[in-house]
Length: 360
Image (cartoon, rainbow, N blue to C red; front, side, top):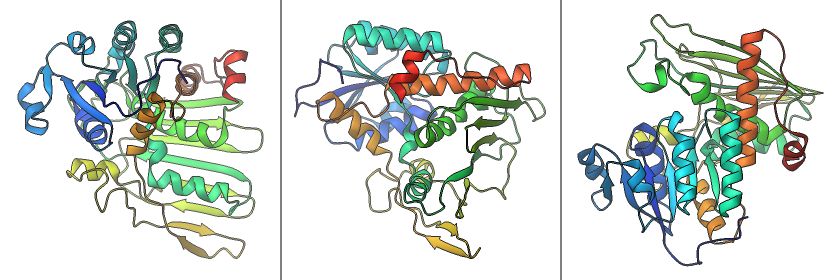
């Protein structure tokens, strides 16, 4: 935890940088649903769009001006990936605490520079790996922790979409930080690292499959561990027939068919924390030695927990929910998969011995 914290009981004033899909759909509603957090500034060139949803906030067209606003304690960066490092640098130099949307940065060099700067400025730096609080992942995590399938031997995690038409947006254009692997890969990797730690090596196969696509829209990555394999997969051409999670152990298997519903709820205007928030009616299915399916209730998801932990970290009550070093590890796997896909050979993660020791 950092030495400089926010006084307990004080409202933590937040500037949200960017009001595109991620800022509007995830960050703004989650922040506004957490007691003690106060969204006061939004950086956007579309003031009318912001004011329709958030009539009480101050809208500033310039991200740089929003970041240095004197009333702001915490800056949340939800702008395009290439802007993460420069805007986070500006915020830390301005004495602000910082949350960066995933992926942390474009590369590990940028990430390490931000980590060093946050340490120098004694400010909290966190990365928005919100899917640690998804219902599907929490259910699988629970089954593994309880030993219901024994020792994991095969872990398979999919985040798939069916979007055959290439859309005009920066994530699907050939610009730094774009592509499906940098968009969904961080979610898949972070969950795997939380469960199993760093892999011995990484094998990546990354492709562009849709007609007219400028950047990768399919990725299949294997994380190699001494006693088990982890498969991470994402695609823009899956209409159905694939489970979110499939896990095989030496005493059984568990499968989760459908994904967490919080994103769908947020898109539908469900308020985080309301009656149906995070509920998941799609049961986990456990297979034991008798090979018969047994339904298990899926726990509720709650991505508000990320911002609750950020609030509590700033008031000295708990640790940073996603440390920058954990986010650096995600970047290391992300980059190793790209190197593997380009070279056709297994790659190890480019972390120092000291970084690895701190992660263990």
